[in-house]
Length: 388
Image 1 (tube, rainbow, N blue to C red):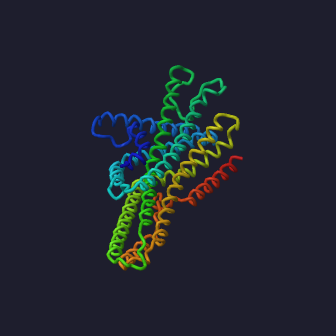
Image 2: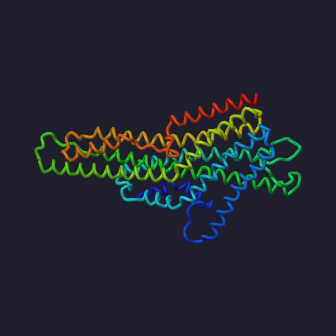
Image 3: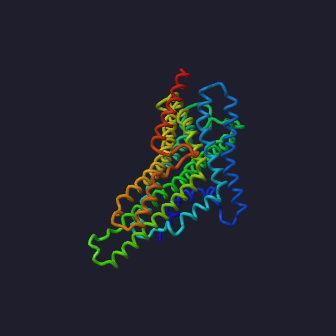
C-alpha cells in the first residue's frame, strides 16, 4: 500500500525538516527550536538590514528599486514561514486527513492516479526549485566576475563592516549567501507543501470519477431478478461511497484553504510589485552583464511560482466540474428510484465547483494569472515612464 503523505509531501517535508521548520518529533526539542531560531534569524535580520539600506539611499530610484525587489520576496518568505509554523496543528490534521481510509487507493488504477498526480507536482516543483537555486547562484557569483576595483556584496543591504578588510568581507559575503539559499529553500518548500495538497485533492477527485465509471448497467430483460437486485444494491453502495468520498475531498480542501489562504493571498499580492520592480531592473541593467541574466532568471522564478498556484487551483476546479459530467454519463436511467434521487441531490450540490481562493477572495485560476500579469505590466509602464 502506497503512502500518500510520503508521495506528495516527501520533498518539501525533507527540506523543511532539515531547516528545522517542519513540526519536530519529540526528541531533541530544545536543540531543534534553537536551530529553527537561528534559521529564521538569518531571514529577519536580512529584512532589517534591507530596510536600513533603503532608508539610507531613499530618493535614489535606481538604488531603492534594486533593494526593493528582494525586500518583497524576503518579506513573503518570512510571512509564509511564520504562518506555516503557527499552523502546525492544522498541518498535522491535514496529514492525518490524507491517511484516512476513504482516501486509501482500492485498486492498482487508483495507485496509478495518485502516482501520476504526485509525479506531476514533484516535477513542476523541481523546475521551480531549480530556477530559484540557479538565481541564487548567479547572485552569489556576481561579485566574483565583476571587474570593479572595490569589492562589493551580492545584495544591496546595509552591512556594518568594511568591505576592504579581511575577514570582514568574507564573513559578510558568507552571511548573505547562506541567508539567500535558506530563503530560496523555504520559498519553494512552503509553497510546494500547499500545492501538493491541492494536487492530492485533484487525484482524489479523479479516483471518484474512476469509481463512477464502475457503476454497472442493468440488463433490460432483467431475466434473473436476483442478479438485478444484487447489481442495483452494489451500484447504490458504490454511488454512496462516491458521495462520501467527494464530501471528504471538499472538507480536506476547505481545511487546506483555511490554513494557507492568507499565505497565498500575500504571495499573489506581492507578486504584482515584485514582477513590476524586476521588470524595471531588467530595463535598467546592461544586457551583457551577469546581473541582467540573474534578474531574468529571477523573473522566471516568480512567474513559475505564480503559474504553479494558478494552474493547480485551475486543475482542482476543472476536475470537480468534470466529476459532475461523469455523474450524468453513468447509466442512472437504468437504476432504481433511490439511486436517481441520490443522483439529483449530488448533482445539485456539484453545481458549485470546488474553487480554491486566496484570501477567500481571489480564485486560483488561469484568468487570475493573466490578470496579475496585466496589473504588473500596468504598474511597470507607469514607473518606467516616470523614470524617463
